[in-house]
Length: 449
Image (cartoon, rainbow, N blue to C red):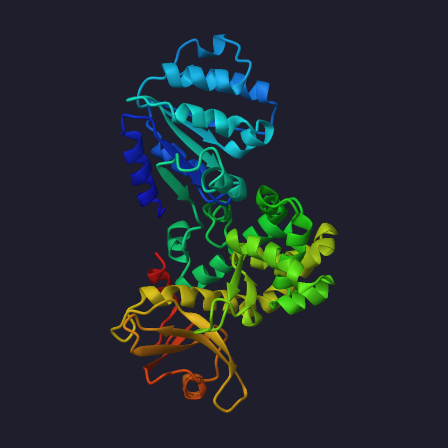
């Protein structure tokens, strides 16, 4: 789903005559291996999964796999990686593709590998095999190809970062759910295709939640720790930051106080979580990039946000198999939790919605003193691409007493917003159960495709 551009790019690269390098990386379970399987030429490719074993054992197994292209390749003993890749690049049929999945596992055991591959890639030849390096360690894969000091820097013709799917694609995985239920499903699983595949095997989302996440035996019960281990050397501090953010500590000063550490020591760990798209750093609409004092940290990934809000603080109860009691706690708070996810989806959708006949820039929240000098919070603000209009929106998921009350509240917020700068203000309600003129889940999901 939604990988057409990536398939096109890889397919085009594989049709070239001279050797090419492609790098595919991203968070685990986002469909990188599936992308390889669907893009690799059926009769001229070798797929090899690199696991965590001794280099000699890995070389033997790779030689066996490469014998599909070069008969008898495995009959020779290769003392090092230089020997195996030198022969492969010398004898492999032109146009064949070698895909090394989870390449970072090989590099952990053999740090010289990138330099060996660089030597082969820099050898001028008119024809030869193509190479695809794929991995879930975003830190290591980025370092291999994006770091100016890395041996493979500047060698790749394609660098594809595979991200979670937008929420609009959930309908393909759960065709029996209505738009509201799809928003709730996204609040559980986020945009990770493998999570969707696992959840769709269950009759209900509640059963999937219990079996996959809440049960200590569940496939996803310890998933956050695995995610952090892929990319971070200090998982203890990162996990602590995520749990505090998940429990409601959103400002740097709050995190510093809870951890008993100076704020300056947390800047780099937080920035690393932001770079991995695990945490988002929000600032009020119109604020400067350097205005760190008003920054607001939130867990960006819905699955992780759910896990650190509900699973992490109740792990002892879950280990004691008090799953139903924890589930009751979740159900009592779930609508409030989904409301935050709904806000995020609305902001993502605004640039893709033609509201009031206008195209809009990225939407942000706003908070600060209003014109009456009292604290004011606005869910959604976006400027038109032309700059002459301002969209101010209120996002509602919980049941409201009346639409007129919600509309009056929104009008009051717009009047008190201190930075309209003479722009025409357009008001919009984004509601779970939209009335005429409002934007609801179906429109938002349709925009996020």
